[in-house]
Image 1: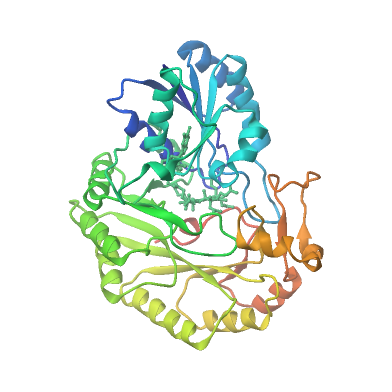
Image 2: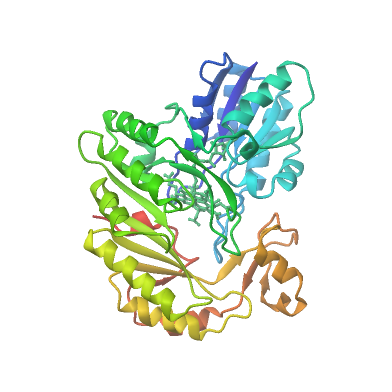
Length: 417
Ligand code: B12
């Protein structure tokens, strides 16, 4: 059975190396399945390249990684599924079975499977579930159309392998950065987020160190963490940092963090292992004095260890009073953070708390934005409760503040050196 992995992600602000396929290919090693990859990110003629690859390799299965449904931001939203469907159709017409996976796919698996008219899909981490699915197909048994990849991780420490499949140089030349993962899942419970309340599986810390060591030996020394948030379990975080410290020669890395938990020890090890910039996710709802004090401690510890902070500030949830944003803007303006991106437009996804709040209150309908004529949630729908003009008024003249949705860039590109 031959598998062709396809990366259809051609959004390049910045381009992202599809490392999910590298972990998947790592899991295939030793199983005897033949596979090849086609990365369409920089292709000048993706359709022709795909057709050529299919006629040369003759795969039985095409495995598509669907990293994004759309860009999540508004305005200037880009919806990716119609383009991906064109590639899926080409594979289908060659007789391949289609298997879908990826972070975007996992958000609305049933809907995307149907939209793509694909055969099977895996939600969440695919490493173990994909191999099982191949075995089931090979044994001529009928698998479930959708498998929950998390269900296959019985232990919460995961020994993984990562293959090296893609042309990293081309990504780096175009503003990309090499990613790595230290855990799967998220303990956060943000009301708008599709990653909320997912079981967490930790990568074995020494294997994370080893992965970065191998990448460093290949000449890469600047990395981006690909966990939802890093600080879910401080013991694991510190173990990972220590493992990174064991690599000879310095590396730099950048990460996502939530405001809690943290400790002086964590920041010490972050800095020692080369973390020099973090994106901190903050919210303005339920803001009270104790949260501000906690935040001040977080910011001063990062500063003490020379780690720069970019803030992603989410505001304007249903029923929220704008005075909370005013308070947060005034506070952050006095703090040693490099940039603050303010977001008040939320992409609605079925299954999130925000979506059920909206569905249960028709008074919120006036805040909904439908950028496309299709009114299903597969095509983006947003809720926006704070007017753009109000955000502009509150942040006017405050240089480090930026309203999200206009600029096509991400924090590691904004904060250099
Ligand atoms: C890190 C990250 C970034 C970094 C990437 C850095 C880098 N160089 O790698 C940066 C900051 C650059 C970034 C940018 C963007 N991101 Co981002 N990002 C993430 C994050 C946190 C991790 C993604 C990741 O790499 N995971 C690690 C890899 C190993 O996992 P994986 O790809 O999911 O693969 C596993 C499974 O999905 C599965 N799998 C994957 N492919 C396949 C294929 C098959 C066939 C199978 C069976 C299984 C399978 O198995 C894999 C191994 O376990 C996710 C959220 C999340 N926790 O997933 C958001 C996320 C993917 N990003 C998102 C978005 C919107 C963006 C941007 C569009 C933001 C913007 N407006 O600029 C850009 C897009 C950039 C681009 N060119 O695509 C959204 C997509 C949401 C949606 N509606 O679809 C997510 C889900 C966050 C969210 N909840 O909103 N991002």
